[in-house]
Length: 166
Length: 229
Image (cartoon, rainbow over all chains, first blue to last red; front, side):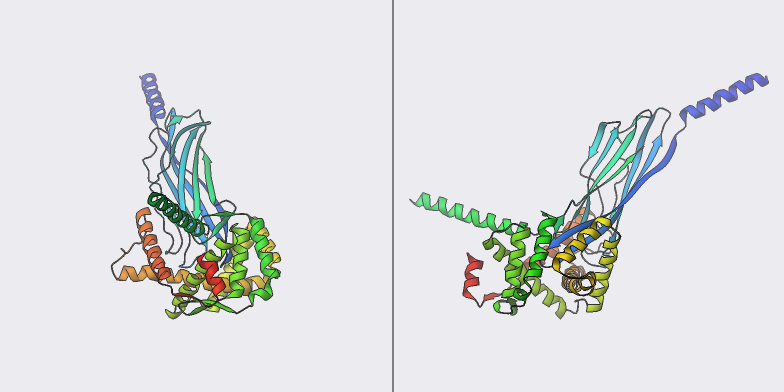
C-alpha cells in the first residue's frame, strides 16, 4: 500500500513539474549621451538612461515574454525646459538568428518637451503573440530608440539600442 | 504663350517653396560632421574682431541685428550645414530675428534665466559631459578649437548660450501653460503620443505666428537684397 502511495505521489510530483510555469523578469539598461549643435546655441549634450524590462514566462517546452516595459530617464538637463523627444522605433524578438516578429508602431507614452524628467516610455503587455519559442533556442529582444530635438543638428548617431538574450 | 508662362510661373513657385523648405529643414533633425563643427569653432576663434562689428544691418521688431553676428553665423552655416551663401544669409537672418524676438519676449515676461541660473545649467552640462568619455573628448576638442580654456568655456562662453537658449525654452513652456489655463490645451500629467503632438503642434503654431508677425526692417540695402534674392 505504501509502495502505491509513493508511486502515486511521485507521479503527481512529476506531473506538476511537467506543467509548471516559471516567470522571471529579465532586464537590461544603458546610458547614452546624445550630442548636438546649433548655429546660435553651440554644442549641447543630453544624457538619457534607458531600461528594458520583460516578463519571461517559461513553460515545460517553450518560453515567451508576456510583457515588455521600457523606461527612459533624462539625466540632464533636469529642469523644466525643452528636453527633446525619445521614441521607441522598433522592438524585435528573435529565436536564435530567426526574427519572429518586429513591432514598429508601438503604443508608447512619453513625457517630454515641456515636462520635467523622467521620460517614460511604455510598451504594454500582450504583444507576445507569435513570439513563443522552444526553450532550446536562444531568444533575443532588441529595442530600438531614437532621440530627437528640432532645435539641434545631431553630432553622431541619435539612436540607441537595448538588447537582451533570454 | 499663355500656357508657357503658366508653366514657368509654376516651376518658379515650386522652386521657391522647395528652397524655403530646404533652408528651414536644415536646422533640426540633421546629422552633422563633428569635424565641420570643430571647423566652425575654429572660425569663431579666428573671427573674434568681426563678431564685435555692431553695425546695425536690420531690426526685428525694433531689436538690432548686427553685421558681425550675421557674417559669423553665415560662415558657420556654410561650414556645418553646407549651405550656399545665399541660403546661409536667409537662414541666419531668419533664425537670428526669431531668436532675438523670442528672447526679448522671455525677458519681458520675467522668464529669462538669471546669470546664476545659467551658470548652474552650464556647470550641470559640464558634469554630465565629464561622465562620458566620448562626449568629454569631443567637447574638449570643441573648446580648444574655440581657443578657450575649459574654465572660460563652462563659466563664461557656454553660460551666455545657456542663458539665451533655456530662456526661450521657458517661454515655449509658458505658451503651453497659458493655453492650458485658457482651456486651449488639455492638462496632461503623462503624455501619450497624441497629447505630445497636440502640445508641440500648438507651440509650433504659436511660434510660427510670432515669426510671421516679425517686422523685419533692413537698414543696409545690400543685406536686404541678399535676404530677398
